[in-house]
Length: 363
Image (cartoon, rainbow, N blue to C red; front, side, top):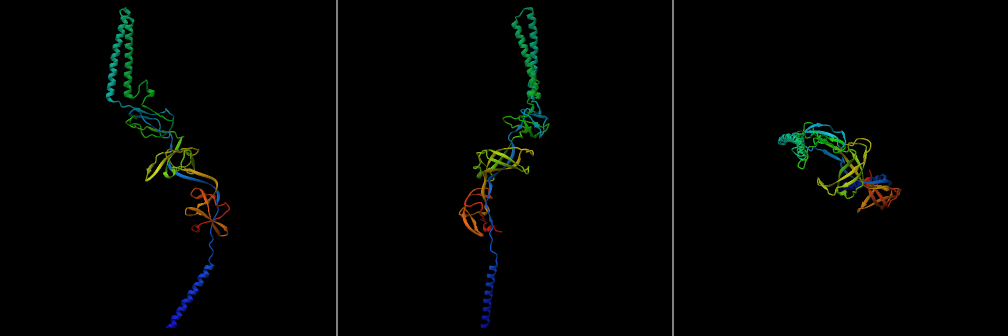
């Protein structure tokens, strides 16, 4: 039994010794690790933030009536070009019955007064011919007749205004004629002939007959996060990408940053406005959604390093520089502007030096 145990022990010891020899052989045969490297290069680094919003006309107005009534005629449709003062619609007045009755009574009274003044004038003329009255008395009768005639005409004009919204004297400037207050393009006509429209006043916004905008002057309205708003200044350059227009970018200049933020979904946003520089190509329509790249800072032709080559210890950046084939030394570097992919190298590295990629980056 003791001989059997001794044999088994010797066998286990021999197997362990053989395994150790095999492991050492395999380790000696394994290929050495070759670290990949990268080099810095000269490039332009641009730091940006993105604002989302839309492109809208700088000047856009809603044309509304000054009298309530029925839309009798529409002279424009969406897409038409108009000038300031062009006629775009006509309204038919629905008279108030109380006002109409009062106006008709005024005409009747004025007609009676005119007939009476005419008879007096004729009588005074006969008496003056006979020499029984003075010239001044006849002059008074003539004046009374002239005033009665003017009152009748005014009463008739008032009746016509109540019935139709215009008279013979005011037909060209009547409130029933809706004219554009802005030159540009008709963007929207939200009413149809026969619709009832309500006048605009201090108590009512009124019915919009048409929306007109100057499409030759557009602005970008968007919002940026509060973390970036402190870096924005008027005059900064923007680059717009419009979703509906592919492969084309538009330049813009920042005009305004709102002094007050608006909370949206738990985050505070600030509105911005920028003037858009239009160019030849596709027509830019109102309310196109757009993204604006805002250039916060820019460095041209500077030494830059791929941020994947950087390592950090305690927040301080450093790199491992190749000093001999596959031999590296640690070196601290001073960094400048970063765009998230590349960082500007201010000191600690030259353009002809190779930098080791961190072990985690090796495939």
